[in-house]
Image 1 (cartoon, rainbow, N blue to C red):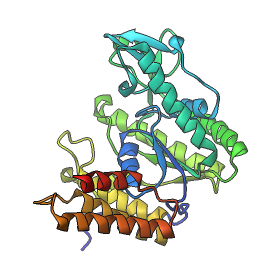
Image 2: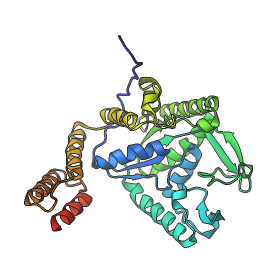
Image 3: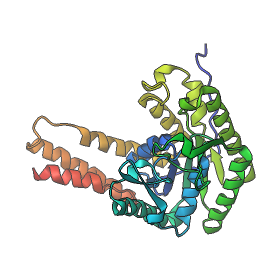
Image 4: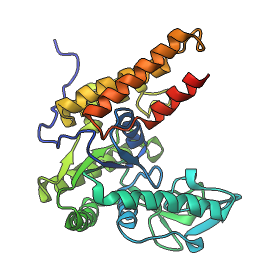
Length: 329
């Protein structure tokens, strides 16, 4: 007896290793996946503009990374005692204008420097609903709690998304012909839009992703994160208390499916070794000053050194620093 609807996983997704460079952009679901990739020692940049939900804001951010954009005073506005950028998450906002600009431009410069080395860009679309600033007629990435009267709300069309991304992907492929794009649709429901409008929004994103796959075969791929949560995990026990965001169990489930579809066998082995190191460092000893615990830490350092001899591209600097601090106590 089958107690759930199984989702067919794609078998044509590009296989990645910890030697590949990744950029993740999009909704907070990309943050969840991104952190798990970081834990598994994949070199990746996660949301250099902060969380972005709609495809047009994501594409604008990608164009600014690939171009020569530098943010200045004219790109910011002051509201509720902070300086904000309409393209950035409030994590970048600050009461000090120079601090805001420094934070924005530092992240932008880092992403731009990494762009030529990228192997794959993972994009998570959250909603097809956008807010256009009534003064500039530009789609904003974040409203920063300004009144709704300052914006015009509308839903993007499939054609609008496809046209925008076809041009963007073609431009990026001119600079890096081996670049891959993986699209996911966030399973997080935008309940404030209303459930029917949320469904229309997700359908728009799914249709656009399918069109892009068809138009750019071999470069654009789709991973069914949305379908996994909607079908295989169709139960509120897989959601957080707000009944909108996926629970930690659901995130782990989708992550395991993603790893199965996208990681090489070697990458999976490395991930397991790195997970063992991470769990070992999370261990809280009863006597941290004891010789036994110091030998335990030395074994962890040795394991990292052995992995680095085999896979020199793995970055264990943070773990080494932590071991060094603990050994000095």
